[in-house]
Amino acid sequence: MRKKIAVLPGDGIGPEVMHEAIKVLDATAKKHSLDFNYEYADVGGTAHDKHGTALPDKTLQVCKSSDAILFGSVGGPKWDNLPKEKKIERSSLLALRKYFGFYANLRPAILYPQIVNISPIKGISLNGFDIMVVRELSGDAYFGNSILEEDWASDEMKYTKQQCRRIAKIAFEIAMKRKKHVTCVDKSNVLSSSIFFRNSVTEVSKTYPDVKMDCMYIDNATMQIIKRPMDFDVIVTTNLFGDILSDEAAMLTGSIGMLPSVSLNENGFGLYEPAGGSAPDIAGKGIANPIAQILCAALMLRYSFNMEKPASSIEGAVKKILEDGYRTKDIIETGMKEVGTKEMGNLIAEKIK
Ligand code: IPM
Ligand code: MN
Image (cartoon, rainbow, N blue to C red; front, side, top):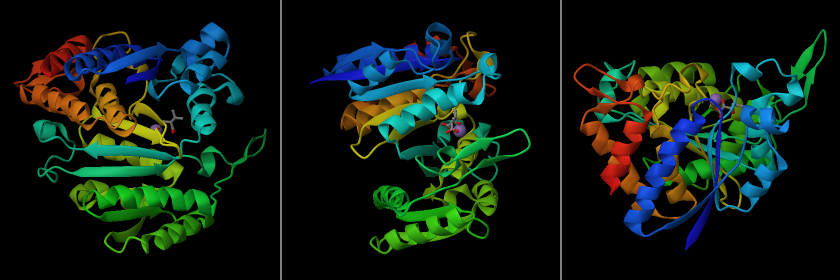
């Protein structure tokens, strides 16, 4: 069956890495007799420059009529001084999250044995780790009342029972398929919204007696995740803490250029986006790591299209290429072969064929 994919490359390294992800998807389609129809649309600063808005109506229409959204990245220093309501990230990515009701953001952080030596904590983490950060995406300071005045400013961290329970459920369901361990990360020694979140997650945990649940304050969690990353399985947390903690977990794997993420709504519709940003400092140089974007494509096949075999064939190809010693600049070590964005995409696509 033909699957329609909305392709939103965006800014910075977005278009370069997206090009490689599409290449890999094409190779996968050929190999597994699949039919993908791509519809490209502008988003982010690029869209702002062209159409005066970071999320044009046309783009929204393309997304609405698609089976999944493959997203690159948005933003960059060029647009840093726009007024609050025009800010690229707010008016494109956050607007998309709000519009489609993406509430569950899954961010796997896996330390691949092939690149264990580039992890900043290689001494502690030699056995590798596999953490799934389940970030609540629809509430908290991101979507609360936000006021910016001359002499004062405020952001409301609001959560409803329904928001907390549905993300907790996702976390426990995922844990059931993994090591059956959920850690709730919050700041319930200070914040009401955190007390509420923790209580709600604890309530939901009662319906999953096979899953072990523990709780941790965010400040402690940032330390423990460095000290003993292998002790974590699924982390469920609020929007802002999830934003921060998922970046930290990603960096422990050696490079944020390796990690995909998915945002899902209640109908299972998904947006797939690399965990890293638009990396304007290396944009256009042909050196960005396309693996995160390529793994986004794999996650899309798995979660949105239920195509497990093609998804694992992409993931398998990535591992093989790493085993063969090919590395982009961000994950290079002595004795390995350095390749650019395009070459890495070609190698992975070839492996699939
Ligand atoms: C992310 C990003 C976004 C966020 C920004 C670009 C708005 O950092 O997806 O993690 O803070 O959620
Ligand atoms: Mn972030």
